[in-house]
Length: 216
Image (tube, rainbow, N blue to C red; front, side, top):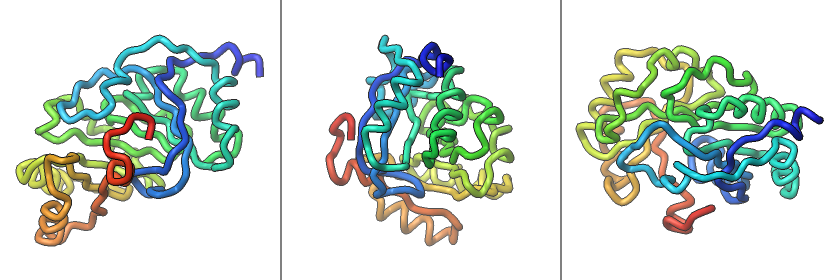
């Protein structure tokens, strides 16, 4: 426990809400948002997490999470993997009995992540302007418990994603998500059906419910 008291991470916020994305959509979840990200995607909706100085010990984080009855915890960012102590936080959450997911940009090696964590990994599409940051070596590491997410802003993004899936064998579930207020979900749905893709259409439930309200 002393180690958990002395090991800190820079935290933007810890909040309780409904999971708005991925497999656990709609489930009450505690979100632990880490500060900092090496990427600058042009559609990013959490730029407020790029900077800040709020170091919290893992023990403090666990105590905050324990205030809520849910067993679901999502570690997100920013880019959580940009802080090396994120791995220790994930281990501590798993050891505490939580169902843990981690949202990551896919630009950092995911090999060291606890095997019980469900990884929700982005592949950056061309419209993000960060396509060059994709670490394609992560793709074969993903398992059935994990999820691969494409955030799509245009038809050219969509075609790029479909081509990538044609050239990689993906074991995880695949999520296609339209950029909020840039691409209509019905358009993306039609393209998925047109291409007969084995993917899940994902809309951001939290934005449908609360818009761009921070901490939801």
